[in-house]
Each structure stands twice: as structure tokens, then as C-alpha cells.
Length: 240
Image (cartoon, rainbow, N blue to C red; front, side, top):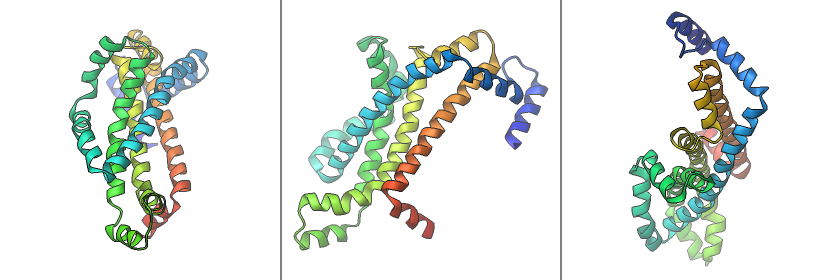
């Protein structure tokens, strides 16, 4: 309520065509929700999001687990991982467009590149934060490598893995929007460009709000999944 009031008062005082009032933005959101073209635009954009994030989820968790357990795998992955972490992702967009064109493939790969580094880093950190004495005890009792993974490493690393998945999802949404704003305006980017060109700021802000709501809803779903998969992590956090 405070944010809405400040927003409304500032927009009225600014009296700018580029800054809509809170009420105008709310009206814009309602109009967008009644427009079938908006649902089509989100469907087109989310195709790249779903595919890119799914690939990053599988590859990121697998690479993170392998890198945490095997030094050779980490030595192979680490240079590429560092490059992805320090390189501005927007700088890769022209290269992908030139190599793969402006189709679905370039959008999916960009979403993948945005999301996979944080998933790998958090998965690797989650495995490595498992206490070494638990591993030593398991080996002393004759546990196999499979039993160590199933009983100790995966349960211990799961909270960190899910944190990486949430962060990766946020970056995947960012990648989905960035690639459309800069190069391939297919769905959401097309809407933003359309309303920006018409100076319909209420609708423009409305699209942004819908993207934020979608991202928040997806992350909330992941939090529910995390509590189902790793209830012990949540209870431990409450005790602390």
C-alpha cells in the first residue's frame, strides 16, 4: 500500500508521459488480462524459458554433482564455468544470433547460458558442505559409492541445489526477456516494444508487472517443492 501511494503521488507530481500512475498501471494490467494476444505472447516467450531452463536444470545439477566429487571433472568444467560467470550475458546474444539465427534455438541456448552457471555452483557447493566425518563413517561401515550418494551426499546437498535452481530460474526469466528486448522480439519483447512505441506507459508497466508476477509464482512453486523434498532443511532453519 505504501509503495502504491508513493508511486501514485510521484507520477502525479512528475506529470510525465513515460511514468504512469499506479491506478493507470492497474487499469493496464486488467486490460492486458482480457487481451488474448497477451496470452499468446507469454506462451511464445515461455517456450524458450521452459526448454532452456529444463536443459540447464539437467546439465547444471549433473555437472555440479560430478565436479564436487571428481577432480578431473571439476578441472575440465571450471574454466568454462568461470567464463560464464564473469562474461556479460548480453554480449553473447549477437554471437548466438549470428551462429544460430533468430529462431527458437538461439533463445533456448541463451536462457540455458543465463541459468546453468548458478545451478552448477550451488550444486557443487551443496555437496562439498556435507560434513567429511559422515563420509568417513559411511566408508568405515563399508558403504558403497551409490549408498553414499543416496543416503548422505544428495540429502545433504539438496537445500543448496534447490537454492541454485531458484536462482537459476530467476536468471532464466531474465534471459528470456533480455534476448527479446535486444534482438528477437517474439512474445513479451514484442509487447513491450509495441507499447513503448505508442507511449502507452500504463500497458508497458503492466507487461512488466505480469512478468514479475510470473517469476514470483514460479519461484513460489519451487519453494513448495523444496519443502516437500527437503523438509528437514526448513525445520533446521526455523530452529536456528
